[in-house]
Image 1 (cartoon, rainbow over the protein chains, first blue to last red):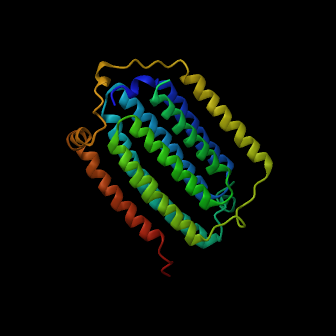
Image 2 (cartoon, each protein chain N blue to C red; image 1 turned 135 degrees about the horizontal axis):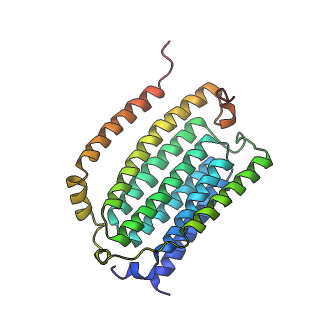
Image 3 (tube, rainbow over the protein chains, first blue to last red; image 1 turned 45 degrees about the vertical axis):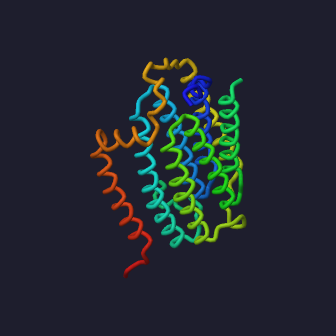
Amino acid sequence: MKEVIIGIPIQWYIYLCVTLFCIGVLGVLFRRNAIIIFMCIELMLNAVNLLMVSFSRYLGDTSGQVFVFFVMVVAAAEVAVGLAILMMIYRNTKSTDIDTLNNLKW
Amino acid sequence: MQLSQYLFFFLSFVAVLSAIMVILDKNPVHSVLYLIITFIAIACHYLLLNSTFLFAVQIIVYSGAIMVLFLYVIMMLNLNKEIEPHKKNIPKVIAVISAGLLMMCLVALLKGAEVNMLPAARNSNIGLIENLGKVLFKEYMLPFEISSILFLAAMVGAVFLSKKEIN
């Protein structure tokens, strides 16, 4: 298992994570469904997590992986509250289209 | 090419392809299933980086708990293809252009980055649960306790938000 890391440069992980993050950004801008937007936010969090794990592995520092653990904790809490808010929005507007939520729009 | 490089390319291909399908698929249930594939591919990347603890946590928390929560909400809202909101073409083009610009900027920024592997990185045991647990419960004890308060707050908030109107 020690030799596995030698064959893969860190640049490959950087490019992979940038690609995944940009797909997440594209999804947030592209879709109107609030649930899909939530899922794309999770995708962005995961891209950053993967980058942190690869950096912690390449630099030999455990703190990066502990931080990933905390990001997962916060993401779980965020999803629980966010989906509850989404349920409440659906109950009031009968849709998950974010264009219906324009009351604060100037 | 080594075996690990083949594995890297295969897992990256699966992750990126299913991430694109998350965006393009009109059916929210299919999007959730594609996102589960992406998360499992990322979990296998963790395994490739020899961090077995995060591999297990990723499978259990993300692919298990969070995605089941999404599926459950989609089931309760009864979303399907027919009530999927439609969008005009111009905002889509603008979204693609701006995401492409962001990606171009990030790649250009990170292209010259050089990370020299430290001698400590030869130690491949840092991702194992034994070492991670020691660090978590010695150096990160306070954040660990505070995250329990965060969970309590999130639980109370979720229950409170999903209640019917009292008056």
